[in-house]
Amino acid sequence: MINDIHLGPLTIHLYGVMVAIGYMSALLISEHRAKKQGLNPDILFGIFWCAVIGGAVGSKLLYYTVNIKDILRDPSILWNLQNGWVVYGGIIGGVVSGLGYCHYKKVDFLRYLDLVLPAVAFAQGCGRMGCFFSGCCYGRETDSVFSIQYWQSDYAPNGVKLIPTQIYSSIGDFAMAFILMIYAKREPKKGKITAVYCILYSIGRFIIEIFRNDYRGAFGILSTSQLISIFILILGIVVFLWAEKRTV
Image 1 (cartoon, helix red, strand yellow):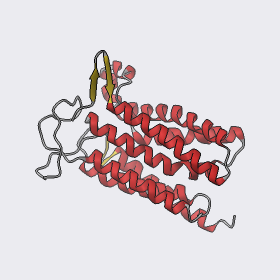
Image 2 (cartoon, rainbow, N blue to C red; image 1 turned 60 degrees about the vertical axis):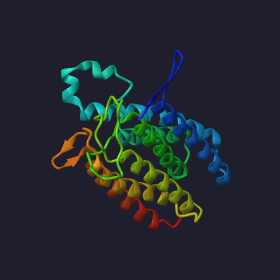
Image 3 (tube, one colour; image 1 turned 180 degrees about the vertical axis):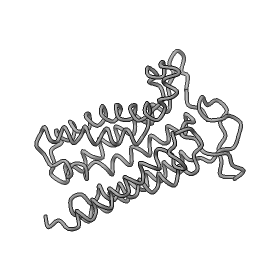
Image 4 (tube, helix red, strand yellow; image 1 turned 45 degrees about the vertical axis):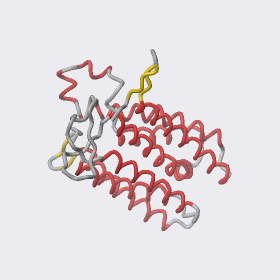
C-alpha cells in the first residue's frame, strides 16, 4: 500500500488527505443539516474549530498516557506530530471543547451534538481509510483471502498478510453515519442520536480491537480502547433511557 505520492519536490501524504476530507465532509454535512433544522451555522462553525483543536489535544493526551513508558525512555516522542493520534482521545477532547464553547455561547449543547455526530461518524470513516493507506491501526496476521499486504509501511509489518481492520472500521463508520442520518429523520427525542452513536461505535470498536495487532495499551485482557468502549456503551444506554423519559 502506498501512502506517499511524490510529484516532483511535492510529497502528498494520503493519510493527511483523507483526514482533511473527513474534516471538510463533516463540516459540510453538518452545515446542510443545520440549515434544515434551523440551527445557527455560526455556532456550528465555532463548535467545529473547538472540536478540531480540542480533538487534537485529547488525541495526543491519550496517546501520551498509553505510551508513557516509551516517552520516559525517549522524550522526543512528545514532539512527533506525524503519528501518535488516538481516536477515542480525539472524540472525548472534541466533545469537551464543544461543550465548553456551547456553555460560553449559552446554546443547547446536546442539540448540536445530535446534529454533528452523524457527520463525525462519516469523518471517522474517511480517517480510517487514511489509516489503511499509511498502515497504522493494522490487523493480525491471517491466511484468509480477505487480507492485505504492505511493502512500504513505516507502521505495519511488511510482506505478510494482515486482516484489513482499517477497511472494516471504515465501512462500519460509514454505515453508522447513514444509520444515524436516517434515524434523525424520525426526529427522535433530544439526546437519542448521541446515545445511539455511543452504543453503535462502542460495540463496533470493541469488536474490531480483537482483530488489531498494533500496540494500543492494555488493562488486563482488554486494550485501552476496549475498556473505554465499555464505559461509552454504558453512557450511551443511560443517555438513551434518560432521553426516552424526557417529556420535551
